[in-house]
Image (tube, rainbow, N blue to C red; front, side, top):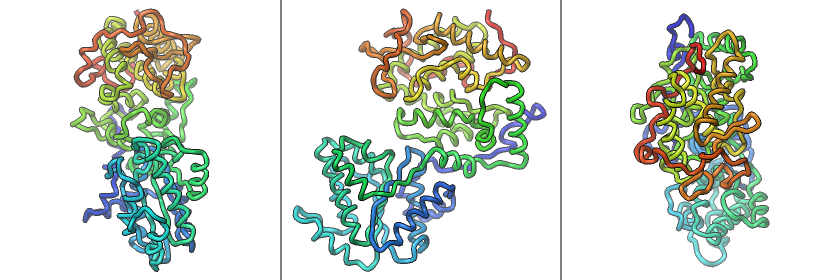
Length: 489
């Protein structure tokens, strides 16, 4: 905090970036914003150059654009379409036909959808005969398929799935002798969308050799260079903050380069969000998390983080706050919604008499939830927790901060419920109403030790979870760690 009064808003603004882009936005009169707001990161520039080389060839080919929900696939496709329609990127005329497959029910055959859009008469005979009319056009054709992986995953059975994949194979093969290209957007490689025969996978891989990946580095660049509008003095203030954090917490590892790029986001927050993104309903991505948290949203009762004092950080526990309404909607999270959250909402005051310690315990529980949801983490250590929260109750003795976090975790494990401690690590152990363990990221138990007695299928306070999930301790919420001396009674 600079001068004791500076807020984040004084040095930073947030661009009202659209959190969801659809190809249908291209039809609006004001569609120019799709290109005006698109950030050409180094990764995007590489992809555009690769597509340019592909489209300038005399023969066609296929490409997959791969990125998780919220990584910007649809925005990339919309920008590509606008550039091509404006006569840019390629030197020869190109007809662009785009389809968003989310608009079609799973019962539709991909061949019928694509053939209808291209004006090809689909039949039961040799496909090549019907497609030759398209191949006789002087201009080339680019077919853009958005939401392909979702469409394939929605297939009712393996036969329908493989039929659509075989049609993709046909498109790839047919394009080799014609000026016809396919760019399909997917959330993962096609081999992960269903049970795919190995021979068919190899053929698809050969016919679609170009894979354009939208990685976390692209998302970070989008946040740092497009969403965060940094005012004069921002860079110097972040450097001073980083130096202060290094002095006050010398034992904590912090990526200073990333902090300077994305403050007020804690670098670990983006990493954890990337790890657990597949666990949640695909309605919110990283961009939505950043924009909503910083700008606030009255409809979701989110206060603008921009109004926090300078030095506050969006730590990983804010991820749980952002998705808290989904915990009661998705079946795999029912044990969290009906056991963990209600029990601690009722018992935190008994476990931790001081309000500052209750706030710390609530934030630690949220970190444990994230570790539980992550497919790559087994447990949380006290040192990790202190680093993720940048907990600094004592500015004089950093090791004391670690001891406070350790004692809070120990009390949750010893006197609370659902928290297991072993060999310096902590994790959650929950069971649903049927007695089975809460599914982990792999969808099955991971062989970790069972929790302490009483950490099983308790359902205390389940009735309180029927409505919208409330903060574990309503008076606290996820706020910056208090700069006060804490001690356990």
